[in-house]
Length: 134
Image 1: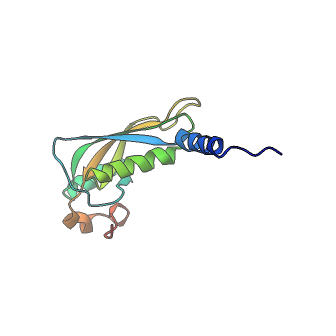
Image 2: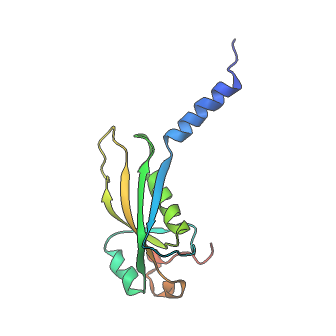
Image 3: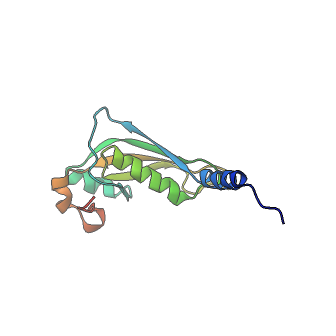
């Protein structure tokens, strides 16, 4: 019986993992914001009015995509949530891209990133309220 070489096995695992990686890029409105959450909360478009009414503001956009056609939608959403949060957003709202992507195409999405001040979180409905412990 022939044993697989450790490097070959490592390379195969690395290739499988990298095939599912997603990428996200943040474009700011020109100002820098300190992070206040570990992951931004994904909201629907109707919730944007609630965020604005609570004192929130749009602080930029996030463009996210799967690295390959095999990248799960959840991976793209998770990456968008983390990148938005690292740039100071508390919430993000889908504005365009592929929700129902045909087979063989990469998943992409564009999101508007919102920041609601910490002192206004209590005015948000429970599903939109970020966790108070980071």
